[in-house]
Amino acid sequence: MALTPSTADFAVRTRASFDRQAVMRLMGARLVHVAAGEIDIELPFRTDLTQQHGFLHAGVVTTLVDSACGFAAFTLMPAGAAVLTIEFKVNLLSPAKGELLIAMGRILRAGRNVTVCEGEAWMRAGDERKQVAQMLATLMTVRDSGIEG
Amino acid sequence: MALTPSTADFAVRTRASFDRQAVMRLMGARLVHVAAGEIDIELPFRTDLTQQHGFLHAGVVTTLVDSACGFAAFTLMPAGAAVLTIEFKVNLLSPAKGELLIAMGRILRAGRNVTVCEGEAWMRAGDERKQVAQMLATLMTVRDSGIEG
Amino acid sequence: MALTPSTADFAVRTRASFDRQAVMRLMGARLVHVAAGEIDIELPFRTDLTQQHGFLHAGVVTTLVDSACGFAAFTLMPAGAAVLTIEFKVNLLSPAKGELLIAMGRILRAGRNVTVCEGEAWMRAGDERKQVAQMLATLMTVRDSGIEG
Amino acid sequence: MALTPSTADFAVRTRASFDRQAVMRLMGARLVHVAAGEIDIELPFRTDLTQQHGFLHAGVVTTLVDSACGFAAFTLMPAGAAVLTIEFKVNLLSPAKGELLIAMGRILRAGRNVTVCEGEAWMRAGDERKQVAQMLATLMTVRDSGIEG
Image 1 (tube, rainbow over the protein chains, first blue to last red):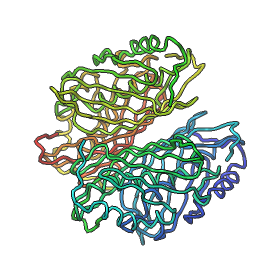
Image 2 (tube, rainbow over the protein chains, first blue to last red):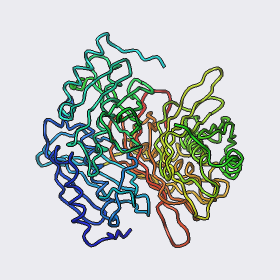
Image 3 (spheres, rainbow over the protein chains, first blue to last red):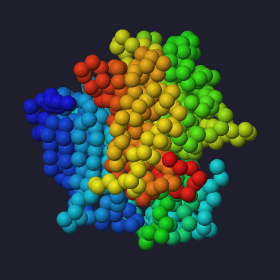
Image 4 (tube, chains in turn orange, cyan, green, brown):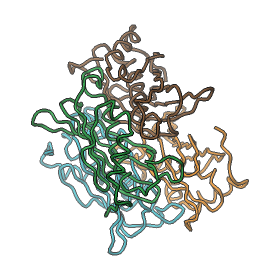
């Protein structure tokens, strides 16, 4: 499927929207890849983001992958439109243990109103990289709502 | 379905496990209800947990509901066993706007190895309460793994 | 949530739409309850609907619950509009063994474009009734598409 | 991930198990590809499997993809073990209109007790092939239960 961004400055608009997600700052997440229908976000491991066994909390992993899917959908949005997550499902494949979490969102199907994305999260620990999560997400385009980005 | 906690001190063990979830502290979440198969967690609204439109990030809402489901399952675990989330699906029903998020986890079916939970999140804004999320989650009992709680 | 059917003859229209679902006839399913936002469908056990262990196939159970959710959403649709399933998630709680499957769909949230439904399937075996599936589904209202019902 | 079938005759055992799924016969489905962690099933279009708009019913598409995922997991099972679907989520991407449905199941992660599979369904209509569904499924290995295959 060819994915066509609807505005020339989609990467600038996507980065600006990411910078307005306060929770990404709180967690220390960085937007490291923006292309039409593609987003990568990285998060260095921090102990204040863990659950009771010392792994990154499943909800933290999910937050990153959800954002990656949301911004992947956003890259194709017309100016003035926003993207809302309707729902997602995520499988936690392995404990999120290591130094760096990489969350990736990719568009599987872009419709006029509904976009479906796949997301993955991988954990880098030393020289190894292990997949820790797989997501399937549904997002909706919101036009003329007064919200944007 | 009758839900029987497997140890008399299940509430104490559940609260101790919650206190070890560092990310709950970071977000400012409080465990406000513990019963056999039932957990409620509250989170006062904070702007550093928002997405780009000023609502609580879907991932933050999800983190709370996932924790509520996980600890609901944990209330029935034998001593020495841990609970891991295998997967969940969440529908975001309304923007999470208001003063207080209440996340609830309830066991739908408790099996020997697999527990299925339902989760809900509600947002209190002034005198109103609105449901913002619905979750269906699958958790696994882990025995003799060296991890506990 | 108050659920208001948008036309007085919603039950007639829903039954007519059900009768056009050929696969319901093939499987022997019956529409036994229609109310605003509520559908029950029954399916007597048949060996030609089973998987390799003699239980009703998970896909058959799912087909019934998906239809129950779809028609529950349809009860609120304006004349000329159709409902399409965007996605669903289903947990299979117990093997579907017994004489009669009862699938129930209920609206959790009805929006202008997106409806979220919960579905359940129960199996009756002698005097017992056991829940075999729990679903959370997202449906979309389609207007002016040339398809209806 | 290297996927190792646990018995030399895994393909024979998988085909035998498929032949015992009565509902596959009822629908006219054919097992067309068996490899370690990989299954393809085909279903020629039939009007008695449709919903009210003349497309294959979402539940029928789902039944095929669920079976493809289940048998993909089964290819790695030790002799005497069975596979049960715990849960799955499926996005319906396009109406299932055309001559032939191809359902594919692939293992994403194979654990000792839990296997995660991805499934896809594509519809062939003339010279075109269009994806109609994407699935993410969780399956459980059942040992020493008296059920097999």
